[in-house]
Length: 221
Image 1 (cartoon, helix red, strand yellow):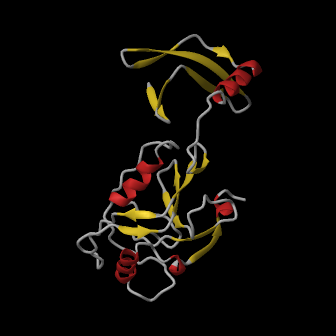
Image 2 (image 1 turned 45 degrees about the vertical axis):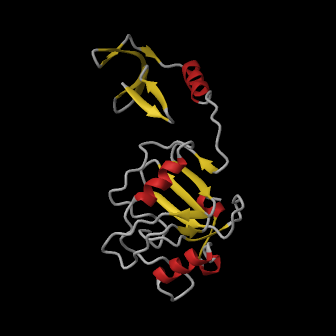
Image 3 (image 1 turned 135 degrees about the horizontal axis):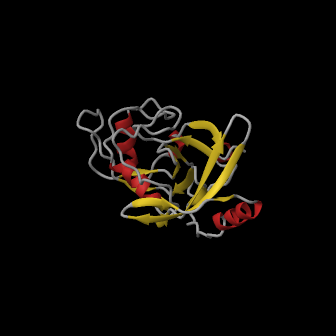
């Protein structure tokens, strides 16, 4: 059995099995081999403290380079930012907004989890965020009030990889925008805001509505 982790194909080599009774638990280590697509357990042996120490050392032995846009990465979630730029927005035919030209958008901050959830925030500036950076509601559709994205049938990469951040954001922007008026500091129609941004060549960040959060809160600080 093989599984992809961060673009590296990992092979099942060992198994730990817990044998339990109401009064005790025994952990056995079994080496694994593969034959005809089936995993075969070798002879078992009791697990020792030395085994766990070696296992911990192996688990932390790989060193990965993190691209500059990545702000945080773990096996459970990943946070990165992308500078302000023009993006193509694909509005569903049922949407009240119909704009064909690329729209300048502010810098955006994305958060994805290993369970497949995505959140997106806007930033008021292009500098790399720090823990004190204020987060704003993204001026985008298909986003709930808590900044979580309604992904619908959008297919994200199947595992977290800090080298594939663009694949996540591109998957979102390839999806059809269907619902949800963005929270902005204006009563103007959303389409009018986007048309004005296209005319000026930049998104008016003065219209961004604060979420009341800083980046530190996404890190649990």
